Image 1 (tube, rainbow, N blue to C red):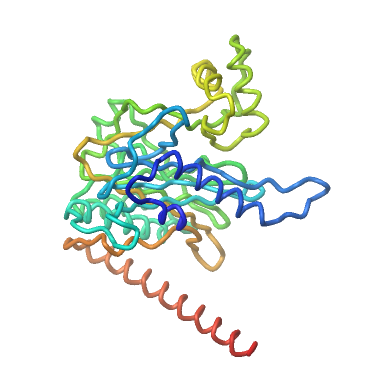
Image 2 (cartoon, helix red, strand yellow):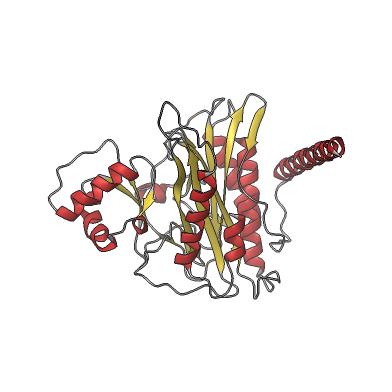
Length: 362
């Protein structure tokens, strides 16, 4: 993620960034757990395709090589989303940044609206991560995220949800909505989530996306390229391209999401995916858009529910250039202060340990 951020400069192509991120994940993961288990190599690599979504595009943009998109320019809002796994154990992260004028200088002239939504999304992720603990419920987390969004005058993206993750399962049964559906939302087809309780030893993707718009994603012109195999569905496909695509998916991506960009025969994959989706064999992750003039921020981390408490194990700090004059409610601010104090204590302890180790070796 850090390497990808450094590559987000004026002129950079979205396709190149996605390919760069994929290469880094596979290379770094390939260095770990190289010893075979019972004669079988440990699976590792990409768990969710690297997506780079720009400006009003909310998420899931992983373009194909044949589809040229406009390169990044200074001032663009970039949301990076990715995931990796080792032996099916998944970690995910997402980050929002502004493309600078040059690699050596931070972005300038960031609007108040962008500052509000970025700080809101990041703080909502922090308090949601701290609130996902054994005995708490998904409704309580939704209430807290809603309170944060209201404090900063922004809206949560309705279709984005937090998910429990299990081995080789990125979208588990337990989910957390970012806001409660209204009567109009339910009438429009939005589903109300069943209440669930978090338990020790569970893992969650804490996924928060917020906008200065209405928070209701809409379809755009960009092609959907990210899909996941529906392991419970079977159908005898009629088209040759469809059968070929599904056979490759079952072999290479039997459980985790993938992008059509991963296939050598891109044309055949594009032709075959329609029949696979229409019969429920593949679940699409559509490219979501907000209103053209809306500012969107997206942050995501992975949390583990340990006996000692909830541990946040992925995600980067929010860029310092995102600022706001707005303040959250007192209870939310207290939570943020406690989170910051715990992080500072952990960093101090880590630095002291490192210093002690260095002194012992000298």
